Length: 417
Image: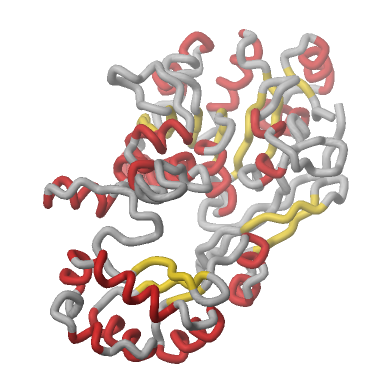
């Protein structure tokens, strides 16, 4: 077995918290990465010979011999990886022993999938009553869809999100459109983090652990926010509006002489100022457009008028004029432009950390700045199983002879190449 260097000591508000991560792909790993950024010790358990599915979701891949994908790298920093065959009784027993040292377990197996290995919540609660156990599935632990696998793309459709995303029907390119990021997974990962921290607060006050049942569909439906409220409280069925806003007008993209510009006017004062800027002040005095509610009802008449006025501008000139007037507007950046934006550079969001072999990995850091306990970046996303020996030796006191026997038997594995 290899002897990796000792990991850096964690800092942050969650130092001392121990998380056993049995999840893969994105929602679970996103949650555990956030916990790791804030100081928790996260041990990622992977299947020998396979590892997290996302390791192969490329190209692009990291050019270090691991062939780990860029996708995998975005959600797995600040973790140590152990490769244990949990389907083998001896492998499952190792994990149960590790649970005794853990505060939190995160898993995203299908409903009941871990019960056969004695790794479900009732089994582990019997061993450790104060355990916080978070299960992430597509549809939750009960209901008619509980046994159906959940995928971000399907959830975006089923939740109604795609019904309000994309250009309207009847125009070129119209029809339902998914968001360009796996937002259902990401939101669920964030809600998992919030729920775990709440459950830990309860545990610290009472000594009682609990089970967190979190579903991608529930999460995404809960985030329909104003669109759902428009229907529930106003009887207005939401529809696709492209980049327009269902309630606030104008709040969309416009075509300038040489490109697109975003205009996001949230109140009547801003609208009046903007109409003066584009030399159409009479629009603000028109009874059809004078208030936000009027503009929303009469958007079909207003937007062509604004299109004609804005089309005479160069995008850079209009954006500059809006900035000078204190109006919210801007351009649509490509991702390379966004990551090189002077504000993003000033905030230090793009970070870099090296793997053990010195290979650099760039990533986007934790966005919140905690004045006393900032986020901490200790571990680059690990190779699968690179910490198996060190963790089992430190956590369970296994000897080198025992580790060699488990390795030979296929119960554990070292780093995948």
